[in-house]
Image (cartoon, rainbow, N blue to C red; front, side):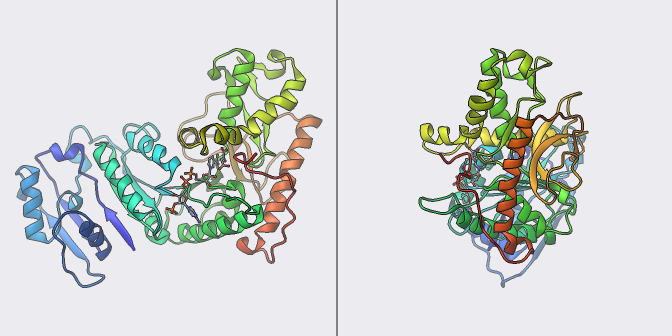
Length: 441
Ligand SMILES: NC(=O)C1=CN([C@@H]2O[C@H](COP(=O)(O)OP(=O)(O)OC[C@H]3O[C@@H](n4cnc5c(N)ncnc54)[C@H](OP(=O)(O)O)[C@@H]3O)[C@@H](O)[C@H]2O)C=CC1
Ligand SMILES: O=C([O-])CC(=O)C(=O)O
């Protein structure tokens, strides 16, 4: 089942008294959403498609009247049936073409923060209208409807459409961005190998769905843990999409590292730059204080306590998620949503001169000697077109190299553990014992 709530014109545009050509196609799945509303149900044969077309001169009356007329004339319901021509209004004339953003785990905690940031325009810009395609499951479907209602009630002008569904092949249709957040949390007594397998299957399926129906240049950000290996599984199951387009979210780790350095140096965190997180989003991740800068100086010039950097700082960043769960009783949701927004903004706006950002990307052809065919967090720059380049002028010392080798070994072990999901044969799980998600302590 998939349902569509076409909220496109429900908010600010409901005030408009002028409606321009609306041409839309409503499948039986749209109708099932409409039946969930308080509107009169429509009886249609299964899989029926209704096409409604309204000429602009037919709809000069106030919208409430139009909706009623529309319904009676076309067997179609209210604002969910209306689309608007963005070029028709002065305010929206200069807007870009609407982009489709698919979000999985959309009824979860991270999404509950993220969706409203996306819809507000703060991520893609004030002239970028968006359509949100929200993926849930049978268990979360009611909650997903609640999310759609809250989005509707928020009157975001840039939010042109909200679609909710439980079938990735429908929800990911024409997605320009796919933010894959939904994943099963690791429960008590569950082996990491078990988590890799259960979540890996989710990401294998979603990779296949993206491959089949998303925009060929869709950008994919995997958040659900273990996010690096889930991203690898996803890209292996989506051979039509460039592997370069897949990211595992390590921006939260970067933000956490910047915060800790700022605190120690006694500066505001905007003074910390060039922060790289290397490797896995796990407790083996490597926050790189060798290449990072504070106020333009090397970290070592500002913080002379090498012991603190190697032990305390590194551990603080690696275990920040776990400490937060201990305090808050649940894993980071708001700051994760902020970091997803940051990760997207880093790809759609040019990176400031001399700086870079971290993201988990496919390691093919990397200049750092890291094993190929992994999703590994590395330093990147973007010119703002959604793509990125790896940063070349990075220095390494023994400490950094040793730590990178450890996180690399962990990712190689995770990869062997999911070989059955990447098409590389029989899985063999020999995960290092101390391997943990940042949220586990
Ligand atoms: N990379 C990073 O920096 C971070 C990653 N995370 C990860 O993000 C993910 C989502 O976190 P959060 O939003 O807080 O979690 P929630 O528990 O609030 O939501 C997770 C969603 O995942 C979905 N899900 C998919 N499969 C299952 C399953 N088998 N069992 C249960 N739920 C499932 C559920 O949605 P539905 O029923 O609709 O499928 C649920 O709504 C987690 O994997 C978490 O570890 C968290 C913080 C930071
Ligand atoms: O382990 C988790 O779910 C939380 C997590 O990734 C983090 O806080 O970095």
